[in-house]
Length: 335
Image 1 (cartoon, helix red, strand yellow):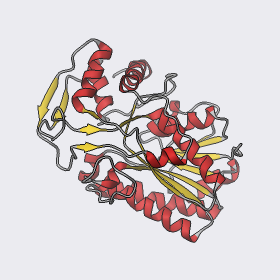
Image 2: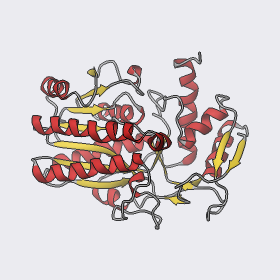
Image 3: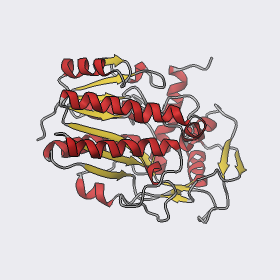
């Protein structure tokens, strides 16, 4: 069995990070969190997990955390994630996702932390010509969000050549759903993810859902995406950490998706089925740069890790998202 070394989760009060904290904790790993709480929530971190409110660019704070916690691995989720905002405010994304990550990685090297797991994205592929997308598909991001994440992949690859550490970059597809036990979920206001938007509409938190593009070369004309349950994604991070520890000279880059896609209308139909209501759909033009289909080839992660998704079902993802959205109304009453 792998030694369960202390892990620091950056952005551990955010959506995916808080699920990774739970996955680590559930599997018996010592875990601590750093988060600046700009988009995260203190209540999303379990009370018995050491929590540091601060910025990943604060190298002195990181040095103290590494010393206090005996940190031997970092799972890095902290950053900005809204694609349209990255287009309107690119320097924010290069600061938060690239420059601040450089500071984090400097602290990692200075402290001799040997393992890093990075939250990358399928946005690094841009609008690929092939579907499904393999890890060898050319990376040609079309927005500052994707570029800022790709720069971090480059930094990690260069670091692993120069220093005694290894890393895993997991390229996520469309993350959705919430912890099946209702402990955390997607909580940030103004989220742009389709399933989050759809369950908000189903529960009366917004009036309609915009459908961007109905003339794609897909079965129903709407865009097709590979949706992955956030808890399955979190477990993949824990398994990736075990793989890094088992083979310290090997670094990994892997897609993280289910390898099948659902269209926008199929997702909205699933939410309708779950609520026995009909969400108002407003059809609009395509957004610039939206590919017709973005589906992962997940053969590499299946061959590399003993990863067996437990929630690879659209109706399950929607049910968990709906349950969390309803609970969120109790936790965060609308002002």
